[in-house]
Image (cartoon, rainbow, N blue to C red):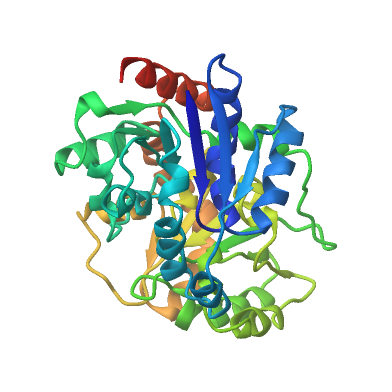
Length: 371
């Protein structure tokens, strides 16, 4: 069997998929080749294989036309992704299966992918509605992290039981291997809070609340602060946002706009407090139940909305004046939220927590034999 794994976005995809590609390549009769679009992906894949102590499958860069390169230079990355996929259909049609880790891969059949089975290794495990999630129905096999996500997509008629497998969250396997590399420490010795805003304009808390939050942390003495927005926050603007944000660095404020620590659970595993809005990284943080504070500057009507289920796991702040007081009382109120955190974490990722990479590889191998 010839299997192509495709990385068509930023290197965060590596931490969800690389361990599965390695596990599948170790099963006799499966030849795995990886394709990447972002040059930085190579370094991250190498780091993961080194940590896992496994050989790397063959790796190829997606060839790109002048149009694709211009879109990349203009930072129109979503458009570039579609152009790159369309230009490489003939290359991918040589395989028995193509494995992607985002819904966008569902357009491949419409673009002309005819021979290979299309497999989705779903990344992220949050509650947020994603506008291209309807593409899930285009995949021949979908691997999901846990029963929560499985039920969500089956209830909406996007997945059928016979084409769905619950395998867990391979990123935890990668974290288990790389966690010894990075320790976050501040000279003052205080614990740190992680601020992890999403990039989507209609939902992010960053636009109006990030700077007041940073100022608030500089004025208190309980926590340090790590500011690590979703990597796609910096898609546009030609680096202006990064430069503006980096000016906020201080001895008690660490700003990260693109390091591996943003991607590999370094911050989510070590933070004492999570502050965010709709990023699915909150579920990675809850591998160890800890206090959460969620920011709702637009006063969205979130109660009883399944897309904001994680907002039941900590206090939701809607007024800027209440931001720092909520952070100050988060530890005291954590006991109230902890049972719900533990329950929802199990529903999100299933059990056991480790071993998802091998379970996903076995599911792909079994599916291909039966196909």
